[in-house]
Image 1 (cartoon, one colour):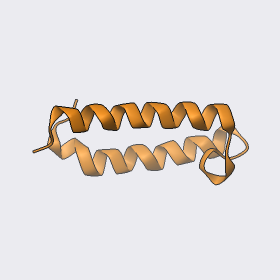
Image 2 (cartoon, helix red, strand yellow):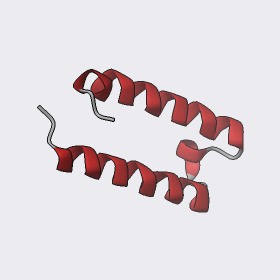
Image 3 (cartoon, one colour):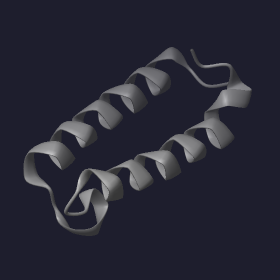
Amino acid sequence: MVSFSQAYWFRCASAILSVLIDSTGVGWVAGDNFGDRTVFWRMFSTLYQIKLEPLQIR
């Protein structure tokens, strides 16, 4: 069972991560253009669904 605080911190971390990526545009994570960033976030959201969707975090 995943507690509320774990879900909360995960959301905070992903929000902070997205802000950092958008503001700094660092390396392979963000890529040099929006297309690369979209690929990264598609991978990230897929991982999110695989790991956390079955746990019913909404």
